[in-house]
Image (cartoon, rainbow, N blue to C red; front, side, top):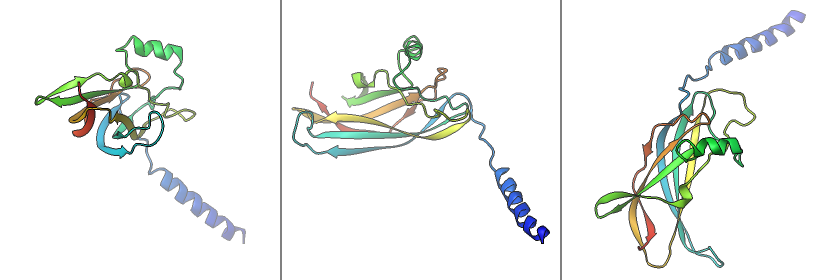
Length: 181
């Protein structure tokens, strides 16, 4: 009788061990790698109140892989981390460079909103190891007085807490409203 009760348990444990041996941790580089997934724009209609004017929201999605899982920072940023980023290129854990087509040439537009951007700690409270996933970045464009649509594209790169910089990806081109200059 006892033998009949033990056999199903041994069978279940055997299946669990077999399945767990099928899952190996990926072997990614400790330098983050990213790939472009897509770009999406949607318009937010105007509503009442200050700052509630019509605007376009652009969402950029990238995929990432990192071997040691040290992407992102505690928010608010600790002073030591802030100094580390400031003295190494003066940008945060991700950088978005914006390029606008004018006179048939893409010119970089330095937007204040893109200075010192940070990804929240993606592995807070989890064991060290390889990670992968997707990140969405959002840009807002207001429809001010005298706006004009310009083709716009972006270049994105990320870096981890040990300042390993990923490859750079470029998005497709999308038209967004810019205030005439």
